[in-house]
Image (cartoon, rainbow, N blue to C red):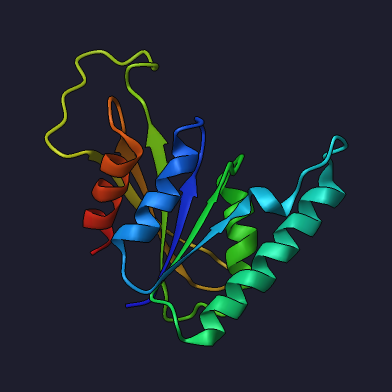
Length: 157
């Protein structure tokens, strides 16, 4: 199955997870979206240019038929940015997963006990395309980037 994997990077160490996941998954490519927009004057115009660049690159990876896993790492402010991207992708038969990495040592969580690092998952449909998207919350407390990537790879496979 072809996968598009969004890693919503919040902390510095989250930026390292995509590189580790790239090594763990076969036939994978990583689009480290930081290249998409560096500007002291970040506004809606520069955001739209960055999103347009990502759509172009992701569609090229999809059309190449060379990759089974397309990993995108960026600090998405909200799901709407990802939904905007997905609307413009040629991804009809693709599994789309969004990973939100959380660190429970930083958050105010009472009686937090995990049997599974994927502590919450949900599915939603993008109305304009009918595309089903899985959003997954994964606890990365005390995890190295490699261990976090290993957890993500087990969820994907």
